[in-house]
Length: 331
Image (tube, rainbow, N blue to C red; front, side, top):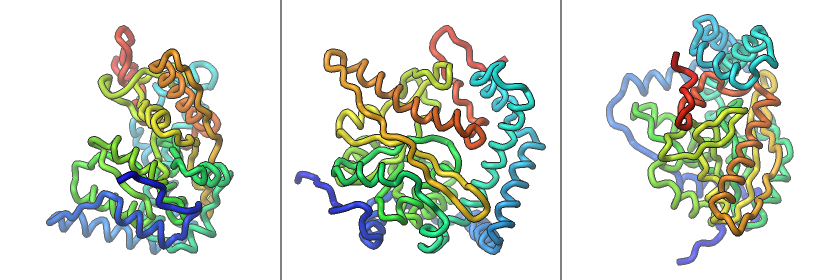
């Protein structure tokens, strides 16, 4: 049977999106792991008891603690040297490293709070900037692809869209700890964020786009050589995911760059920055994919350059290098 778009108009009624998301998301039921599950419940309970100001302060304290403990400091400073070289002083790089960890600390707290908020929170405390970019794109009835990365509040942005009437899904690897995997999947489901199995996901992604879903894809993951292609990433080659370009070529789905961040203690903003037009090279299909994959990556990089404090600098983004180039994280 030929698939068609499920939704007549965007944003769709919240009840329809919620029902659709529950039916089309990966879920698991884990037996045992009672201590781990109880720990998660306690952490959520305590996090929800905090006021927004105290949660904001606690997130900062967690980030500062990570900073004092020099969590992956060498990795972060290596990354900052790759990107900025002598354009920024050591003190400036140090400030970015610290700010990035503070953002990470707040992400941890928010992950224990936001999925459990009611609809009024998502409507009143989460603002969507340039929403018409997504609304107009989806109403072309070709689905949509959101590109971003480990920036700001990361996949919590799915809650903003899911609770605003936009069916959204992401591809995620299975977490080795089953209890943690179950917790993450459940929190995503609470926000109307669908999870797709990482293994053999391309068929599900294509099917979802045809049915009118928005696919959220991170472009800053370090890929194995067999799985990715080398793109220019902030001035140095990095093995990168190019499947969003293949999906765009296959479906004609519009591609929009986005990020989600915490503006202050009680206010969050999701920002759509731009739609990336597709450039056709009919005489060279392989180069067409690579050209557009680089253009999509460039859109995400522009966000990172504008907001370096929001990026996950402790990630080994450049660990896979082309033959002849050394891994920058090894002595």
